[in-house]
Image 1 (tube, helix red, strand yellow):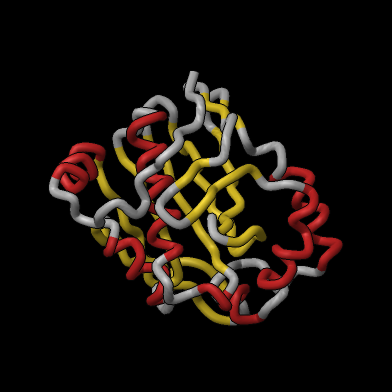
Image 2: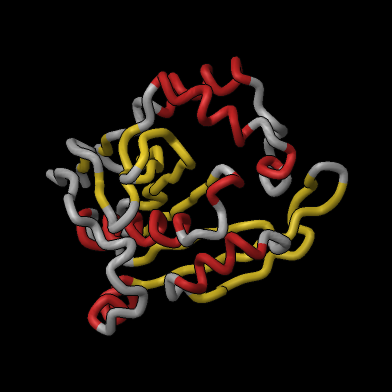
Length: 204
């Protein structure tokens, strides 16, 4: 299973591209916020921490098997990173993957997360021929699991107090969708043109 991002991925309103070293300030603008870190196992990140992380993230633009593709999310109408997203192959043998996404709070509530995540599903099922894609989030993170439900993903599990988390217990929802379920949705135009790629990457 090989894949490489050779061009920005365009949806109706967004552009998904590889992360770059110059994205540090834009990432810091929201990853440094307590409200962003609230549902993650990491604490608000300093600019230096983000720059260190970026040395790894900028390399996540190609796959040679199991691994992660990392994307910057931009609006087509205006330059500048407004969020990040990822697609990780968790099992090449079983054709399983997982998606994740995070937005600057200034851009939430406009459907951007749904649009970006929808594009990730398309890459996973059409370009990588995955059989099943899942996603997880903190059970309190309604915004995140609502995105998953809008994409037609079904809640498969509720892990109750399964891990220590910031002085308490973590609870997570797991959502998933199968390839044939996704294709039936696309044929039925379940979520319109948004999330459909207008320019695809190179899969080889």
